[in-house]
Image (cartoon, rainbow, N blue to C red):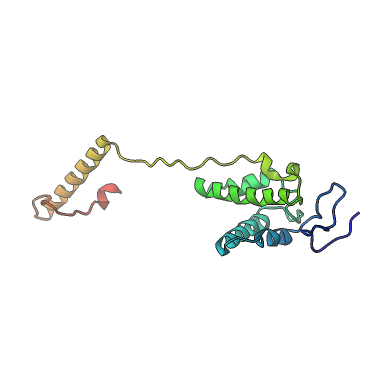
Length: 172
């Protein structure tokens, strides 16, 4: 058994029998991860908020640090139906960076990281849905018909050149 050492990231940090550094609590791991040099204030805040939300709201109460988190917990966190594909990818990237750091710093082995069993979400499609020329013609014809019917009912004579019309009712 090793002696606990508050400064686990020092070269003389106490080690477990497998050679890894001592177990870190969530708070200690997040603090060390976000106190690395060169991080912007926004990066620190985003990482801290993501990791705190993850462990407070999704990780079982009996898992007291990043070690031992099952892959299904990560999948549940990033796979929520309410999240956009882009945000799922962002959350995955944040957790993956955190767990990669834990492995690089010898707090976890590659095998103990849940990220190896979690597939990276697909990036969102960059393709935007546009109207085909036929759809555009059908839409503008429907707008014109709707507006002309409303104009006649109001005593007007259709769309005038350069006039801006209100099209919301036909788009509902």
